[in-house]
Image (cartoon, rainbow, N blue to C red):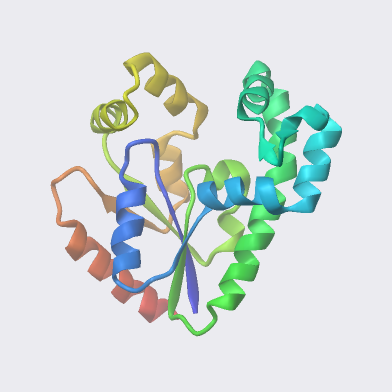
Length: 195
């Protein structure tokens, strides 16, 4: 088995590429979805968030998102504290998930903040989905009904695409210049040779 991470900046199309891989039979672990699930179900996360933010961080068993968001965005040190609670448990959960899919040739993890979270060492290869900034900006504004300033602020909070490309093993160009199907077919062929 070979495990891969699919990453890319906001609006790059990493979710679209992940969905294409999943449709082709490759199981994909979505770190955003699983982090949300674990923040509700993992007793260690719940205990640590309550210790940090108080009992009101959970209301009737549901995460108090406004409280969490106000804490997160108040200071970068606060975000680091939350990430220090959540990220290690998401990584452990991913590794358990990989073991549950041991019969698969290839499994994937979709993760926007792969390098920021330190998840790159949990996989055998990193696939970067790349699109120029202006295309990403347009896609994200349309998808999220957000302003240019809001999307640019999110972009600024992530590692640059150039740095992500340097740290990645494979790059998928999602700007309309090359067929995604052909690129993914070539990628799968290369990954199978790596095994």
